[in-house]
Length: 223
Image 1 (cartoon, rainbow, N blue to C red):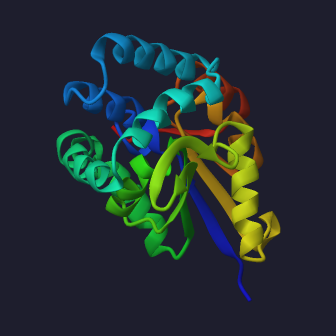
Image 2: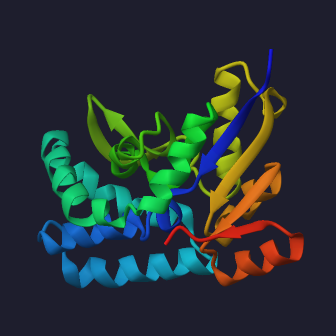
């Protein structure tokens, strides 16, 4: 049986021309759901830490997931529909759509793999037509969010762990694929970029660009 190819896509600042995590917090601030004075500065600090590779993921997730626990799932889902229309759809460019569509048409196993939580990202993955999503999972009880994280965050080395768990559930391993490609913009994704057979830097930050140039990795733009 012929082996399939694996196509992995980071989401924020890779497929999207922006950061859905950052924008979700700003959306809640603009709606008056969370306190601008407290959250806006923190949101920017966490975003800057992420970009510089110094983010404490546990501290950030506490900040990001707590607001989910204060509102019903029905309310949150309604807000998310508004969020998609107002903030996200404009961040999905034609080149990103075509990149994903090309891999899907080739019959590749496509996965969006992101540190952003699955509540924020699942509808975005659907907008790209990608069935498989590996994201940080917010803990739920009786369908409502608790404000805590469930399992390992899909961040840095955690992306490899979560991906290998996903493969193992299907009886697969790295050897099940003829080739593996990962598209990312961020130095935070260097562990997984080093793991795949075809790492691709997409509109990369300075650290990733330098590594990609040094290693002879492909560098592309989706903007």
